Amino acid sequence: MNLLYKSTRNSDKTVTASQAILKGLADDGGLFVPVSVPKLDVTMDELKDMSYQETAYAVMKQFFTDFTEEELKHCINSAYDSKFDTEVIAPLVKVGDTYHLELFHGATIAFKDMALSILPHLMTTSAKKNQVKNEIVILTATSGDTGKAAMAGFADVEGTRIIVFYPKNGVSKVQELQMRTQKGANVDVVAIHGNFDNAQSGVKQMFEDQELAKELADKGYQFSSANSINIGRLVPQVAYYVYAYTKLLANGEIKDGEKINVVVPTGNFGNILAAYYAKNLGVPIAKLICASNDNKVLYDFFQTGTYDKNREFVLTTSPSMDILISSNLERLIYLICGEDSEKTKELMEELKTTGKYTITLEMKEKLADFAAGYSTEEETAESIHDTYQKTGYVMDTHTAVAAHVCGQYRAKSGDQTKCVIASTASPYKFVKSVMSAIDAENANADEFDLLPKLQEVSGVPMPQAIKDILDAKVLHDLECDADKMKDTVKGILGV
Ligand SMILES: *Cc1c(COP(=O)(O)O)cnc(C)c1O
Image 1 (tube, rainbow, N blue to C red):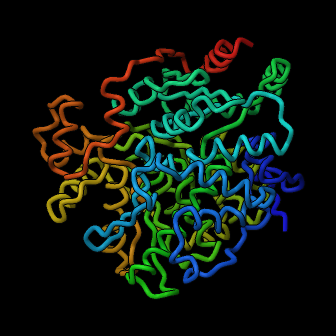
Image 2: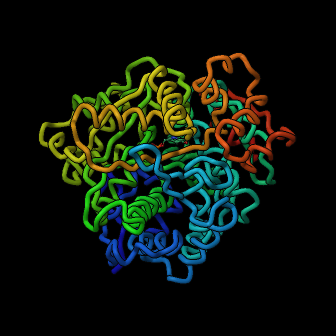
């Protein structure tokens, strides 16, 4: 059966998976969603002895039905290889009474690698399938981690170029240096004078700009996206939730069929939506717990049914979650309003013009699978400190937000269901905040001096990704105002 995709803002027009991957965003500004969410055709018990790659294939073949077995396996094996520092790709580690699904063992030590190491392969395969002759220009807004992972994934991939925009003062030092030292003749990175939402809105506007699309086409270019709005990023993320469940089963931590909860540190709502898809695929997940930092727009949404981005944008120690417009929420909105594309469009228009919208009571009832919480800066630091004191395990600030929310949820609800925490970054990436949480004295130290110290306290060897930036040359120094992104892109492409 061929699974087709439609836009959340127009249910009538359908495209194939490869076309959806190529386009990134639908022409009407909507996000591509599968016409129906598929089910796995293997049981958890059958999956429990499979490798990560085999699990990924079992998941992705249900979504990307216009790829042949050979094509899909080629993409998977090219992505999940020795770029990861562990053969199991996504280790599940028991920390206290929770399980951390470590998603940061790829080339750029954040969970974005789980999808961005495969997206370039999916994209070039899709281009071949659809006889695309144009060069594909990947435009990406990043809150820090997507940018580097996308550049690393697309660097020197034939037939592609990539341009990344990040908020100039909104990323960690390690994140910024990782991006600015990226090699590759086809990569550019630009610091914008604004925040992540400005970057994301600017990119979205370029995607919707039909005139710009024409100008580009005349020069042999077409845009696509490496952001989590691309279904080619979302689907690979579903695989690790399946993998986590089957490993719990294989290790005898749960009984077959036993439900688990999943806690996800959330920004753009991509990672947690992948968990929701996994649940719909047939993974026994009870609650999806959405964890926010001080930018708690999602927490408020789940409490009240009103999404309201009209609030102060807070810079936190978990910068990859400093987001007020969670793009992927549109996919959930579409599902809970009964796949009503007119209603979805109306709400998204409202968000664009007034900065907020309210869902109906009927829609809110369909959010029963979700719980939400948030962690203040102090609580996040405490969470790192206390976990280290109790277990010796050092986690990054984003994961700490989730760990705090997990504890808070358990205490409040009394729900003792076993919890998997999506562990989204290596502590090395946010070394300053992590080491300051462990010992306040480190707050005055130089970020780079803290790297060997982190190795000492955590016992985890310094990852290659960190060693790489220590003596790499800075290759990129472009900057622009938030309202000049289009001119910057034109300049880079010579259009
Ligand atoms: C991107 C990111 C997140 C947020 O994930 P979303 O899919 O945008 O919700 C959380 N933690 C880290 C480290 C990230 O890089």
